Image (tube, rainbow, N blue to C red; front, side, top):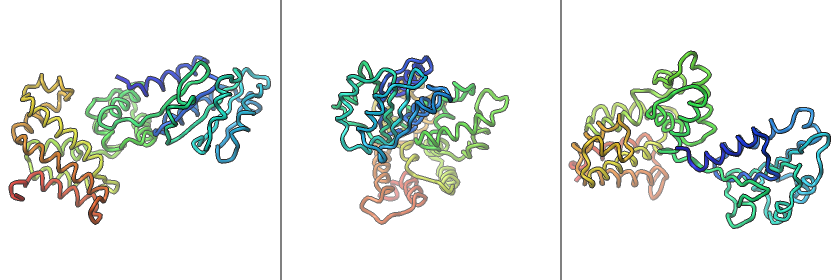
Amino acid sequence: MPSDNQLAYSKIINDLKSKKFYPVYVLHGEEPYFIDEISEYIEKHVLTDAEKAFNQTVFYAKDVELGSIIEAAKRYPMMANHQVIIVKEAQGFKKLDELDTYIDHPVPSTILVLCFKGKKIDGRTKLAKSGKYHFCFESKKLYEDSELPRWIKQYLNERGLGVSDLNCSLIADHVGSDLSKVVNELDKLLINKGDFTELTEAMIEKHIGISKDFNVFELLTAIAYRNTKRAFFINHHMSSAKDFSIIPLLAQFNGFFMKGVVLKQSQIKDQKGMLSLGIGFRQTKDYEKLLANFTLSELEYVMSLVAEYDLKSKGVNQVMVNDQELMKELLFKVFYRKELN
């Protein structure tokens, strides 16, 4: 199910395509991708090329006073139904109170787009609340372990390429939550899909560089089976990558072992019970092995390790150690707790 963030984004784009415009758009939040997509759509598609010459202006907040933008917004279009004013990097304005009066009485033929990238505006202000004449959109970061894989699936499906939930998670884990980078990688797959209608692991490995044999899911499977040799072998290949980072791995570890703790505490061992908790069908075997091979105490211990190594990866209270060494240490402690005690 799409998040509220995605639904709001889809509404704006669909309204724009239907020529339903608001006089003022306030785009703000931590995820720049959606802000760029909306503002670029307005910039490219609201006016014709002939109309843009006299009726479209792009300002940068650092180069102009807010008062000048309001004065420009009060003008009427020339030989067109609308004029478009796009203000980029609007987070550079120190005071926004001047906009309140204009928002209450905007010029209907003006489409004013204010882009506050990387910043959430004060929710108590008039700008932050959609009204009769303006639409406020908060562009939120997608959660890597839930929303991002679903977004990847939707993005590919809408462009004619089917993809399994597992492969969506694989891409999300490898690429990370920077949506601009994610889209760049997904577009590589779409450009090279040929006659394929379903994304395969071979396509992912070839065009994005994610190995179907050496990834975090295979690593977690090896841990669940207590296959020490394979776990260290997979980790060696993964950590040899130039852009290796322990942070997305820790997020996957946290989710995997947290569900293990919940299953253990609830005494759920059957596949039906696991599916009811949102565990994918293909993962149920891994959880069966995890529950058989790890006690509740051991699962909780691994959770504490994940928290510890999250801090270490950020250099808290210790001399910085590279991510490759941290990952080896973590795996060693997961498998050899008894020996360490």
